[in-house]
Length: 164
Ligand SMILES: [Zn+2]
Image (cartoon, rainbow, N blue to C red; front, side, top):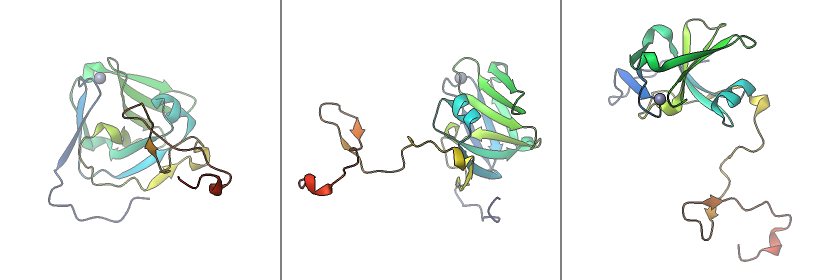
């Protein structure tokens, strides 16, 4: 569970602000959040359209929507007993609440531009991790496609490519 109390860095503000892609929804949490974690479960993958999502978990009472509350819509996933909020203009996931943790709200880490004061050290649903995620393999530029890098397919025999 969460790491022991950390000393707040001098540069750490009292509040951390976040926003959706279009900027209609803005919010803040009191720093530091409770914890940060990677969620590999299917529902989160589908809701984000991504391999996994990284969340910052905060006490609900430390979370405030500062602008655009009327742009937030909610989806109740009755099967999973969760509620997901997102911006109805741009679709950005804003918050994820689980019935089993009624006092906590989970916010996608990506929505905060600044540091949050918590490293995402924890994983939920690690047994569902997708084999196609990027895990830091060596990358090289793709000829003719500026801005695109690629991972060479794994070789069976390294000696076949002595000039690599
Ligand atoms: Zn938006």
